[in-house]
Length: 333
Image (cartoon, rainbow, N blue to C red):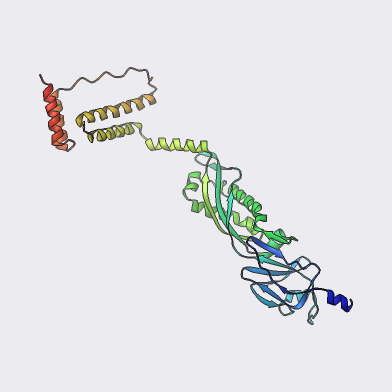
């Protein structure tokens, strides 16, 4: 090579990378240029620089400022037989990788995942959440993801990562035998279970799962309605006790109104009607069945006696008792 050819050739004497948000890997565009002996290499915090020889990693550098020579590049020195030192430029593929945590990423089930619930049977579950990751092991990331690409961004591998998460949800959780209601009750436990299931898939690409959160776990609308109805029936429990409870509430409400004892009678009648209606429905009684005969009017003196007992219990005020007593006495002819 003539002196003019040597002078016209461009040599690289400064190597660094100012990364952009979302970048995971970047190949220094050296083209046919050679790296100058004694060139300066700058690796910033959260970065790793790797020198490749024939597709394999030779020397790697963490954060710092380096002068490239035989002392700082022992593997390349051995490969290139630089045991006596080198003074001339050399060729090498140089890649930078970001080890920063990539946060705020979203995941979700594109299609419902079938979960075999031990209590409810097969269920189709949807789930959504967020996660973060970072490049932890450069070697598998470089060989399986980076390859010969000039650049790799988070957006380039997100579809692959979401697919891995959905597979983990289907195999690691759906096949775990845990009831859906138990999963939904503790989203923290579910998040940890999914993180553990996803970790091996990410590790094969040299990635580590830094955080994983389940933000929503839901069932199809028709299944949710069925669960709501079943929950209502469990809450009601014994229908006879429920009818009595309704009657007691009606009595309390009526007693607080101005009609006093008359309201109590109406509330009790309403509660009894509710109980009879529910009992009839469960027993298959036709809605056209005749209503029971009305109860005969009670003796006014007996009613006054009952009113007095309510007064003693504190259910009636003295004014209410006197008013009702006067009304009942007025009926006697």
